Length: 432
Ligand SMILES: NC(=O)N[C@@H](CC(=O)O)C(=O)O
Ligand SMILES: [Zn+2]
Ligand SMILES: [Zn+2]
Image (cartoon, rainbow, N blue to C red):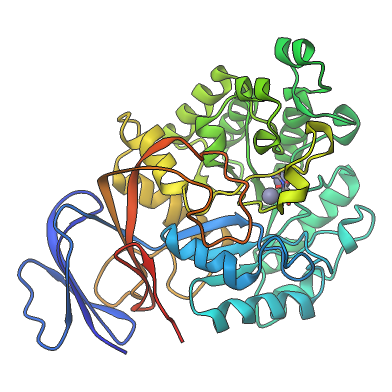
């Protein structure tokens, strides 16, 4: 394992400094480091951030290895600057047992591109009727702390209450996909004037907000931790802001696509824009940006949702919900939040590394500051670069990239996982 010294990086976008790593650990931070025998990396003009942590990733293995595998998804993650991703449980078989979560966890370690922290299902088979073996998943080698039926809502209030109560024993959190199922039967896009105009069944903001409000109240009632997945409406931001003002232990995420894209794109009837929750209005986009800036929304999570061509290149109503996100997340956040002056790079590091790691209680030195003695999970990002996104330029097995053709700022130049480079000069490296 080589030692590296990064020269003249802008630490969290601010002071220019060197950073040395050896044996998987950050060994020195400061100007003009003496680092004999280290591989020299010129980072002039680049921003150094702690390795990014994604709390919401679909890796599709086991079951849909045609769409993504742990290896392909973690290679995409490394290209996006991530050193830890949380793999959602809606696989086949569902990640609802200690056996499945341990398998997913181990596949991530074997690949060596990005640590994979499995999310456990809340209910058996995501069926919504019987609690899964949450304790066994928590006690497994994977040490699961985040539980979610993502893709489906835990809509039964009694079951949701019991899940919230159960995970208190091991400091777990329930990550809710907030979608009232009766209010969204057959729903295809955001409900509004546009859904009427386009003749597509609408998905009211109220279907999300009703569950967000109910779950905040439930979490407070039982004194447990709630995390709201992919929050997408102004009303949801207001409810979470209110819950936080009460001191309740509620956190929330927004996806890059909900920070940038609006329901106007659905006019094309291109299923690349079909996603759950749906793209909302420009007013909702403004609200989630404000919420992320003021800390109401704690984190950005990608909801990277790969789907094979045949599930996307079909008519709108038949297409699958979901879009890729790992390789473009940092660029979209730079474009929407940093270049607009809404967030500093230090605040981006908080929302894309420190806070997600705290919410999930993940170990392995993820989400820690770039400081001596910490695990060497490091990203170098070039904020001056620009690129026209293409679907083909991806390590994912899927191509459902909603940004294809758009010019986005920023580029991940290098990523280190425990001091091992997974990406250098923008190219994936051999890890094993
Ligand atoms: N986001 C999506 O549109 N789809 C996700 C499920 C989900 O995150 O709810 C998927 O698994 O494809
Ligand atoms: Zn979801
Ligand atoms: Zn998801």
